[in-house]
Amino acid sequence: MRVFVRTVSELCITVGTLIVLFVVYVLFWTGVKADSEMNDQIDQLHQQWSKGAVHPTAAASRGAGKAAPTPAPEPGPYTYGRPFAIMYVPRLGFTWNKPVLEGTGTDVLKKGLAHYARTARLGQEGNFAVAGHRRTYGDPFKDFPKLRAGDAVVLTDGTTWFTYRIDKGPYKTVPSDVEVIDPVPRKSGYTRPGRYLTLTTCDPEWGHSHRLIVWAHLDSTQPVEAGEPKALRR
Image (cartoon, rainbow, N blue to C red):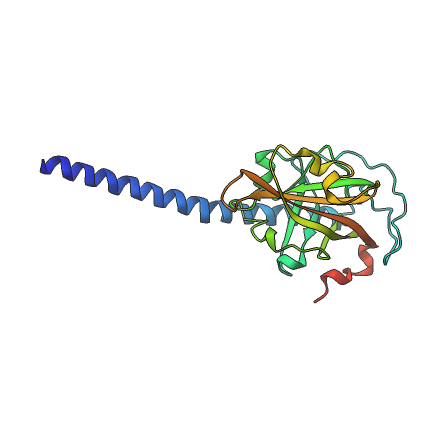
């Protein structure tokens, strides 16, 4: 009997140790690796941009201020798994910045934010839709519920700053509700084609039974050489 009790106790200790190690891996190590990976992606973009290697997005839309963006040339396709822009969200912190990569595969989401390939390019007419993890892999959208109407979401492709303003959200829905990334999302309140941004993440914080959505419109653009947009100035 004593041998049995001791064996069970040892098994419980072993299982408990494995659970603790798994929690440490999920909460800490994946975050460390993801932060390093995201920093590498951002460094890669800065190196490309410093050499003049900029992806042809809507860089031609260079109207400063609140003037309607001018039509941009048709861009070439983004490359799956490669970064093409950096996103800043002041509401999530003035040090918050994440790379945006093409595609929404699990391998891509481990490296930063992921652009839904079937949606519009950055700054183009349509819906530029981006997904990000709520928890694990750097927790990029951990504070997603803090986003409010009027908040700025700023992106750059190395030549142009794009400032979007949130109009609605966070809106809770189910994963099968794919209409949220339509060119004119029906539940967004938009009624006509425009230059929109959709951000998506999982809900609840440690689950994936639902999705949280915010929708924004392109408010202004300006060339990078003009300095940071007002939304990023403290």
